Structures are given as structure tokens and as C-alpha cells.
Length: 246
Image 1: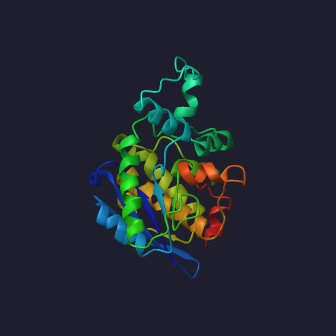
Image 2: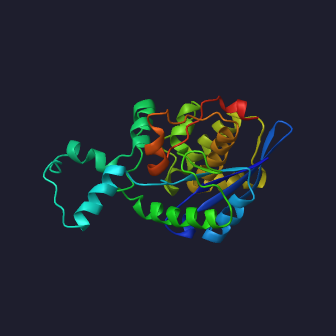
């Protein structure tokens, strides 16, 4: 099978796509590119068995309700917005809180941090993918929401300090650690791109998480969480060891 990983940015310049082919105990990076446009993403995802996108698939229920009420000039005095604790339901989705509780990592807030533009682009992509027949269910779809840093942490690999051009040395160490942890990984001629670009590296990790989802080995919401997750989106964290992907 093939899996695809997308490290989505607000603009194509920093958007990376990785396609990984899984066969005979190997995971071969068949394609890895930066500068991916929406049509590039749609084409790659539509051809894959399972895909992972590093971007929020939805907004917190409480945020959606609050903005709708505010737009209708319905001002609520029941919610305390003058404190971080009071605003928390508006800025953290259920899946964000679950990831934080399980990993200690706090995902960026789709409604309050710099990732909002990425989420808007992602919403447009999900619409385009649905139009070409891709199942975009926000929990169990052909494409799943992923979080590379949390996945790396779960696999006991370096998950901090490799972002940005200035951290090339740390990123090179992260690439080496990933190769040691997954001996069947074949980066080939794309290895240097993973070292030079954290976007490319994250796209490869996203494709590995997509493989976990394809194997049914990612954490899913329980019955009480499912309805909310189906609206807000759900981050798929691997439940298997990284070598089990092979």
C-alpha cells in the first residue's frame, strides 16, 4: 500500500507532501516535495490507501457556539472570558486536551494561535477531497489528522528542537534517529531534503502515522467522545511501536 503525509502550511511554499510505499518489510519514500498546491495534495491523497494531514480538521464546539451567538448580538455573561481558564473551552478542542493529558504536549490552538490560517486551508482541502470521492470523516476517514511531534514522542524519538532552518544539526540527528528506529525506512535521494527542511521531515512522519491508522493502531475517541470528535476533528496518535509499521 501507499500512505501519504502532508505537512500543511497556510501557503504552498512551506507545504510538504510525502508518499511512502510499504512492501516486503520496507517503507520507501517514493516522493517528497515542497511547494505543494491544493491540486497536488488532492491528487496525492486520492491515490493513497490512507493519508495523514498535520492540520486541525475543525474548531472547538464551544468556540463555534460562542462566535455564532456573538454574531447574532447575543452576549453571554455566563462565560468568564477575563481569564485563561475561562477561555480554555474556546481555544482547546477535546482532542487537544486528550493529547495534552497523554503526552504533556499542548497542540497549537486552532482558534487562538498561528495555526488558524492553516486550518482554513485545510477546511477547503477537505471539501475538495470529498468532491473527488475521498472519505473525509473527521475521525475515521481516508485522511486523518496527525501531530508529528506527539507521534515521535510516542515512538521515543527526538520530538523537540528540530524546527526552523537554524536547527539543521538537531534535525539531522532526528533523521538519523528515525532511520535507526525504523530500519526498513528508505529515504533514498530525499534524505537531504528531510535534513534541510522540517516541513519535509514532518511530512514523512505524517505518512508513517497514516500507516498506523491504516493498520488500526491509533488512539480513537471512546463512545462518549465520538460525537464531539466527529465535529472538532481527532488527532490520531500511534498505539504501536514504530517497527510494527512494517
